[in-house]
Amino acid sequence: MDFTWNAEQVAFRDRLRGVLAANLPDNWEAVAGHGPGSAEITEFSKAFCAMLATEGLLTPHWPKAIGGEGLGPWHQTILAEEMWGHGEPRGAQYMNVNWIGPTLMRYGTPEQQARYLPGISAGSAIWCQGFSEPGSGSDLASLRTRAVRDGDTYRVSGQKIWTSYAGLAETCFLLCRTADDRKKGISILLLPMDTPGITVRQIPSIIGEGDIHELFFDDCVVPAGALFGDEGQAWEIIAFSLTNERLGIPRYHLARAALDRAVSVLKGRGAFVREGVRAEAAKAAALCEAARMASYAIVSRRAGGEAIGAESSSARFATVMAERAVAEFVVEYLPEALADAEPYLKMHHQRGIVAGIAAGAAEIQLNIIATDVLKLPREAR
Image (cartoon, rainbow, N blue to C red; front, side, top):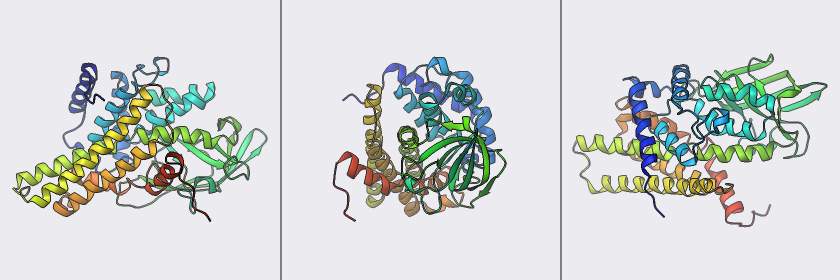
């Protein structure tokens, strides 16, 4: 396999780097430390993503008919790597272009596509995902938030937790129960966040400002046209969506950039001479490269037109291992970096904390690999 980029891909990456250098403020690393769901980055992302849209760099992997450039999965990967390597200046909008938009293209009605896709491709839309609930975090099939059909509306009641970006989002991609069947009873509503009866409470944390929230739905009345797909189709839709999600977050690139920064700081202090330090850095670098190769193998298959399923969990878990290794290296050899001495390293560490939880818990990914990839028998109960 040839792992080198062709000239057009190199030029695309160089162009991205030039755009980033010209449009990120001098204090960007400090700003990025607020977290992708913060008011600062959310506000910045609207102007930044609008600029990317004007440059044809926000959704280049989308079809031209829907605001894209018709480029392929490798361009999407290069774009994501450069954005994540710079602390993701798209803020919450990275979610829109990678999986909310493509899921709308595949499953949305013409009315839903006309309503939501232009805002995403213009860089002005903020979304959140209403997935996890108290008592049913990784086990989505046990969710209890219920939507009851009432004529031309649904009445929604329940609670979500750990919902990223909800405090500033305009629309929620909401999983809810419309029937009692464990999986076939789950549906999706595209719920405007200004619907009466929604309460949003921020959850204080060390991973960012305004990044995660609780949502409470108190008999919210939603038009029946907000149903996304058919009733009971959510499991199929979210399988498609989550595959795009796991391939759209190249955390391995952020981890490797953080590792390179840490090594550079240590070299500057003359502290990278000990064999043990170099060996641990090499281990972390190897894990970053393993995650990158695992991701590239899947992107290569997607570029060849193959459907991607549970295999994405392998790349996802490899990335979690890389993130953890880099975070542990910094804690061990540059702990003062986490006290504002190095904003970039502090930012990586905060985001690394949730690497094994966001986009599907690492332990769940191992279960998926065991049962759906390796075809191992499920544990007897």
